[in-house]
Length: 311
Ligand code: HSE
Image (cartoon, rainbow, N blue to C red; front, top):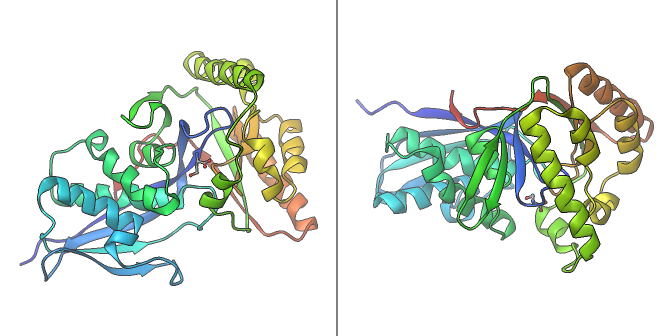
């Protein structure tokens, strides 16, 4: 009898978190992708089925973030001829700024790693997940993939070596994510960024990043509120998002600790020190965008500490 398959869940994530472009990100509880791996009938890994992608993802392992991350692990293990079948269930929107391609990349490599019982840790397979996501936007950065795989709020000291740290989470921290149904492609959203930035702005951004990290260690919500400001990237991307500044003003009025763009957008996030504020911001977003006839989806979540799991 063939070995039963395995199903894993890999969550969406919020990258950049206002102060850490390409080096900071956290995982959400929902949404996320599900990946199933089972034994195949012919040598090599194939993608048997993709659901929820409306034909927009390739079933070619080399062109699919889940397939490629899994393939890189198999290559590392010397097992590329192992007969394996993958099923991908996309349960989150594309081009939303919620790390959709990263969730698939993290889920793909994690599923194979669990199925084969390789004994490799999540940290040891992270590199393959980053390689998987790289085929989506062409850049090597782990600020979505690392939280999706490892869970938590992840600070990356160095993307190349994947030297990173999971930060402690203050009690009560919640997030309201607002996803307006317009598509922003990461590749394009990265392409519009200036290559040079003002030295004084870098100093301010560094201060904010350092203070934000300190506030996570000390549960100092006042300092978090003062520091969650994106001086470098938000002003360059805000125009891609309908009513961004109106929504930011509403969220801050409701008591958000900070409000900015989730990853490359168009999703936005508000970090809050309790769930009631997060819910209230979600309601305000509903009213604002309904009046503007822009469809949105709101996710209220804690920061997901587990990351990818077998489900
Ligand atoms: N740090 C990345 C960006 C996240 O903002 O472009 C999206 O992949």
